[in-house]
Image: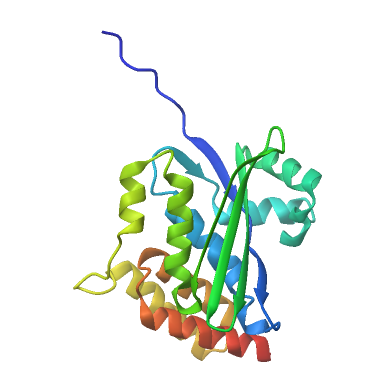
Length: 215
């Protein structure tokens, strides 16, 4: 019996999420980049997808003299997607109203520009990291049931955050104390990507964002 043909993983790029709180509050702006980072981490757990590195996307935008907001233009995002070698591009939005939050995301074909998939989740604002996991699981469900089940049923570890997440969190504290809030925000986001239930990282992420908004 001949072996089944190997299917190459689809390459996916994820843009920063757009949106914010109602009424507008600059201290929630960090979620746009954070949610995109979470989506990359969660989708990358599947062997059926290859995720474009965030630094690679940023580099291409700089080379093309574009900002993340320029990706709202269909022609621009398809051009950027082709430069990245992506098969699909994911664009998301987030809305925070009081203690409630809603996330939506759609996957566009870079080749045709057509919407391939569109998903949404909603819940408590304090659970945005968990909501992002649920959103990623919805995209993964047709592709990878094993990873989907793990995403949907993740639970806090009895041992707490792994060493890699703690190291990122500790580095974030150093930068926060130096008032380098943007670097601290990126490090806390990375820690949460590794360990979604990292309460301290979530709290300091919010503190650093509030401080950054005041600068």
